[in-house]
Amino acid sequence: MSLAPHQFWQTIDAPGTHVGGVTDGWVDGVPAALPDGREILLPIRILPGDGSSAVASLIVNQASFAVEDALSQAMADMLTRIGVDVVVGVPTLGLPLANNIARRLGHSRMVALGTSRKFWYQDALSAPISSITSPTQQKTIFLDPRSLPLLEGQRIAVVDDVISSGTSMAAVLTLLERADLAPVAITAAMLQGTRWQEPLAAWRDRIMAPLRSPRLQLVDTKRWIPAD
Image (tube, rainbow, N blue to C red; front, side, top):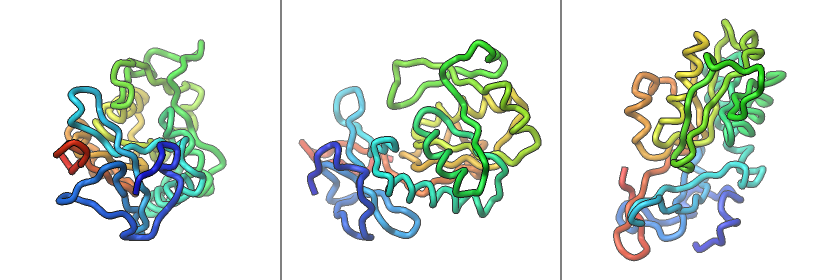
């Protein structure tokens, strides 16, 4: 199936709707399966470099509300089994998911981390952060010191959109550690490839996601197959 860029992430399809795989490869999009087997077609995005590597992309704030709700419900179901008191959202695209999930868990609010420094923020509650989608942009992530009373002594779940290289989430965990906070769960809408497993090795038993997608490598002029 060939879709225009704005048509991805808009529908949830029946199991087995999208063909392709390790042998046949994919051309435009890669299906990722929800826990119940339904599929979301993700566009292939070529990574900077020689054009031979790519990822299956998920941009939550460009998805339909139906897709966002399905992902949020699946993530909330995972957290319900663990039991959490407060949800911490990672900017930027983890924030709409964190809001959605916190409501589904019956919470009255969530706690948002930020990358825009307010004058009352503290260096002690900050950490440098970067991501695979913005590799040249070095940012700083902050925890508002006024949010600390909401987190201390609570069972915390960290919510993000995608974990890929693991560097962004490692920065978040460093930030929380500086505040003497250790989450009981880390959930993302999607785990992308396997490179995140090394930097987050100490946290692997707490990481969960409803979707998984491989990194991709080019095998001819247009077909992509899993690389890891």
